[in-house]
Length: 165
Length: 79
Figure 1: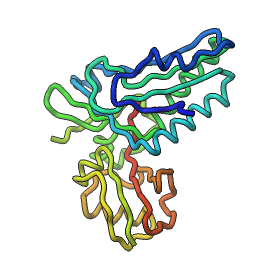
Figure 2: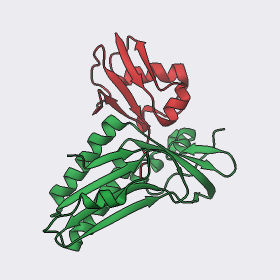
Figure 3: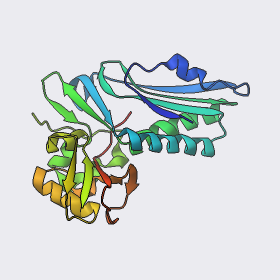
């Protein structure tokens, strides 16, 4: 079962959605993560995503399997992009089909949250200024005594970046 | 013994390579990180990392065996 996978090219959401079809499903919920033009006061121009794919696929599969155990949904799938992405490109897609909507929303939220926390994927932001930085790595590297403020628990609020040139 | 090390993201840039085969006397991932941090000047402390051996998450104190593939995992940022 490939319920978590990577792609080097644009995520095919039509194909991904088709994999969730089920005669017992009354609907599906999806989440798309897009590249936005700013982070922590910096103007972002592009992102580079990199993954330790052998382990990332295993961990991603475990997350989707967890979701299918926790929530009574039909099918779930996550596709993550790697490589260089421009503004508004889709970085990640999560889809869940289910008999009823409530558990589909919950399972979709669970999967994207866990993927952001646990899967060995990294992103480097490139800024209009010409500088760049690895999200969640640069500031904690500069101030290791405060590392606990920037650990995985705070993942949705990437640490402000110090810039390495 | 000989180990295979792969580097990703910030650590790949700081090591200046994506992988290497290394002859080492380090017997655990913790020892190995100390050795490599001294060589390459890694800015992340071990407490900020996770480690994988043979493509599975590992304890820092696990004994390493010849031929093991080790990856140090900086704070992740998928999504």
